[in-house]
Image (cartoon, rainbow, N blue to C red):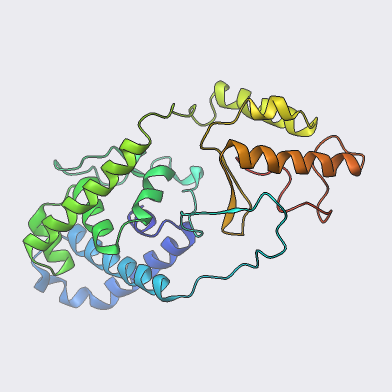
Length: 266
């Protein structure tokens, strides 16, 4: 989970774990010189591999998408990492691992949530590492400074900035109504209403389900449509295209006006 929190991608996290295990096996002879517990030593290696991966990703040029053929409404670029992946539910059971230390601020469930991991990906790599090691895993400040090979003052400063950034994001979202729990009857009811509205091209019913900050994404393209107005215009165009093809809902794949999976993910 540590590598997943650091990288935001389950596939990249698996690679980092393999590299960590290989490095640990190759360096086990020098473990005694670390003067640290096995847990601390392994987390130090894993954090180093994740930091290298984060920095390498920043050096890779972002893919350029041709927007010249886009029909109105113009898509909105996403500000979240395009590599972001949720942690597989099948692996969550019994995956709590070592209990967090006394300084940990986040419960296991919150620390693996997609919202939390998304916020982490927007922080600089070192701030991410310090925040996870201190506030999620409960390592002491001196331990974190040693793991990252930085001064205690530098580690504390990075933690302070990371906490402030997360607090600003939490304040921005404070006025929003929390979504229903995953797999709950309330969530199932909303999904069913959305599916009925989409399949029957009932624009009014669909718009009634949208929040002001609704975002429909078009994976794998790093943009979508954000806000009730743009999403409503997008759905209006999709429904009109569907009616031209004699369908109740959106146009079939490959038809004019179609830009992504059917239906999209709000």
